[in-house]
Length: 146
Image (cartoon, rainbow, N blue to C red; front, side):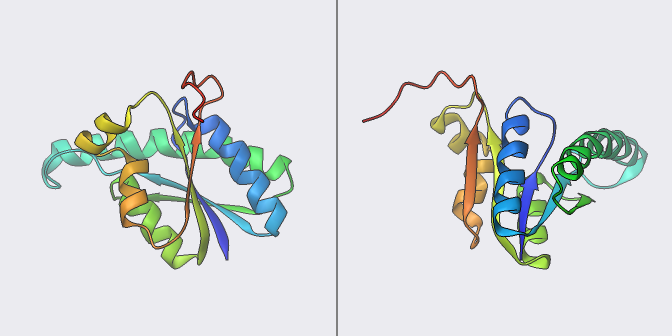
């Protein structure tokens, strides 16, 4: 089994990385770092390939930082950059690696906006057969709920 993390260096990703490392260490499992690099729009033509390569390179750079953090914590980790949209990339990686949980960061989106625009955490919560852990940013100013 494994812990699958969607990592993109967004504001929500840093805390999600720390939590995913803690979960993987607690269960003695591999951390699979995933980046969905599909560019928006149609998937053909030179413009798509150029955009995809730029996104893919940015993803690889971010994942290298996350891989270093996992290695420093003594957690075995692997990296996947996939030509898929983020939610689908995470679902596919979880299936291939026997994911125990998918971890994603959240930041700044209201539940309504996520539902309307299709945030990755929102999609995962509705599509995944694997538990999904949504980690808010540390400076999340959402009021405590009773």
